[in-house]
Length: 415
Ligand SMILES: [Zn+2]
Ligand SMILES: [Zn+2]
Image (tube, rainbow, N blue to C red; front, side, top):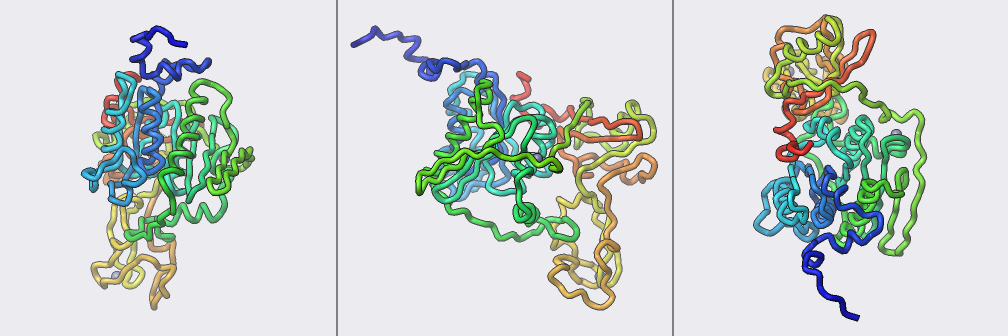
């Protein structure tokens, strides 16, 4: 049987999906989704979001495009080799987006240390498309601390899995093994927590068809979550592409999980990480908390390290995550001070703990003027971050809200 053609319906890119009874294209138009990782999975997921008509997409990756990515990345072309994955993915997602006013922003950098938690606060859902547990654990803690649901996807060979986490209950960290925790720390020197310069990158065996399958499951869960339809919250969907086994496992929460803390009482400040000093932050915090308080950096700031071999000082004055292990060379005796766990300590060597001067909290009672004059960025705090401050009575979280536009770009206009 033939029907008369309706031109308006024919030209609506969302005409078929609107026919799903609970579907609401407006929900998708207004949705704010962060995609962490613009590799094999991220490319597929971004393509899905663009075609579904998602209105606001924020993309995050630290890497650049190489030729070996191209077989799994629908958004990248040969001429993109060497460019930032996040930037190219954002441009291509925007071009592909079927939602007319889609806003796509991106961040090229280190998710664990350099993405302010205020970004998570402004998302409806976070989609994890990363290939390592350090990133997954960081996404998990960030989402849980704000109360944003997230959907993790992982692939290996022809198989993969998707895990859905809500605002409460079980989280990714509830179910990690000791091996995964150790693996998550493999990027750092075990003594000073500084970064290792040279890492053996693990290369996962995989193929584009697997990322397409798993990303489709991940995106489908996100769509259901957005529509408040029954989704696989608290579950792990595992798919074995070799045997075609498909299973859904309920994840068990762990009562003493370290990741279950939540930020409450967030106060927005018109301060920025690069434009404000610690003194500026102190002045604002004082109004709220009085003169006696402690600022939790949530990261380690290293003043100096004493050479284990000749005891002279190596001045650093930087956060640990911006120091590489091979920078810990003593100018005086030219000895290296890293990878001690694998070295036999020579004569006169000082034990770990006695040679490093660092802080992860700053007390208003004992702060040097040198520290007060540093910018928050120099102390290791990223733009749009949340900073937790406490005194004997209360705990308050302050946000560096002045960074909002810098970090979120055009995304910010409709918040
Ligand atoms: Zn947990
Ligand atoms: Zn020395």
